[in-house]
Length: 242
Image (tube, one colour):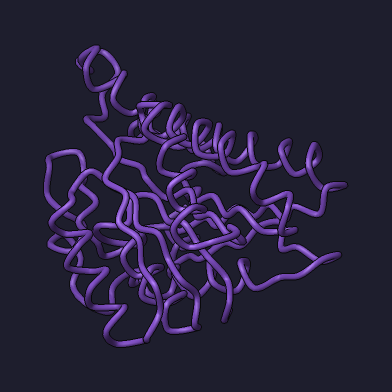
């Protein structure tokens, strides 16, 4: 991925941070987008030092379309032509529909759905110029009905449907579109009671973020006319529970 420039949203932790490290190790310059500027700066300094790549920190809230637009513009101005975008920012709040607050509902919609749309909308023009790739982080929850947190699941179904239809719209422009669907990943992502998955699961029980980052990097490395439509990254016993 040398000479590539990749923008990663939700880059301050978890799958996003692992993806930043992975693409930097492959030689890509990388722009890091999230709200936590201090964490972004620390990570950016680390990967620049370790891999000799250029980094660009763009503190932004993906729910704000103007901030997303400014982040994409500043990335291109600072690092050059954009060849890859990873739409990773996402979160979960609560689970039970009858007790879910308006705030929890709107937060999931704002980050998971609106944020993905704003990022994709701003990324398409620069990616069209480079025949680049856009990778959406979906979820196992976006492919199979389940009783747990239907709202979160619905946002991931939306991501998958949006990405598939976007691929149909921009495929003739040589933009590759991929959905990567993890099941449980040991990150700071919070379960319904607020406990991070990295505390819920012991090492070796579920997928590590680096495995998802490997899948993302594989998708980003595709060149026209080929793309990877969808990659599922599940723990091996996932279907044993059904």
